[in-house]
Image (cartoon, rainbow, N blue to C red; front, side, top):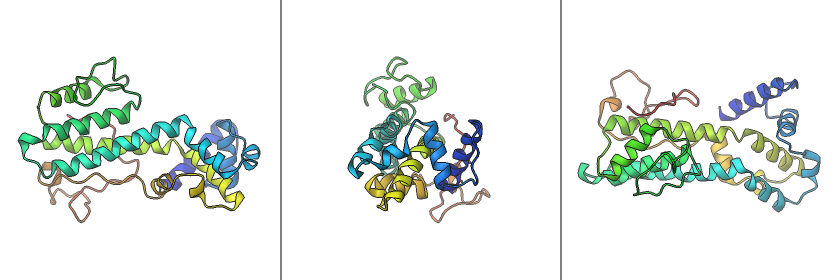
Length: 239
């Protein structure tokens, strides 16, 4: 499904620039059109050694930003695993880690440090409500289950959306690897290819709570977690 979504984005983008593709897929032509819009030259790239192509991919600003986003998201996954094992009086630090990492997803260039108060100056692009949640956590105030569940949903959705924006680069460099007859993982890190195939991992469920009830009519996985479809989330701030 993630591949299909990316293909649709590429095709729609091509039409917006007055370019037509023969089919909405990750074929050579769709990849070439996306590359042209982004200033990538497939003929020049074909002349470069594999190691240089990999360095070039990793040096793309959006790829570098996503590496920060992905690191922040992985910290959120770890924090939620920790929260499940802690008594309420010890959850503030884990909550702060969740909120801090979410701010990093929203603004990878944020200069705020975990444990210090956030301001509008060091968290450009982060909504004021999120800053308030973070500062409350610094003071030792914990989130409730509903707020944690909201952060869980919005963090994955936001991080996945940022990854999906890399479709043009993924298509281009994978096309180059295919043309050279080499494994795409030699050019694109395996982790990126895995996310492209299956999406970011789900954040652990929290257990009991209004949103974790197994009888509320929503589709759930075997652990009771609510199953959402890619792109089916709403980007909202926790209430």
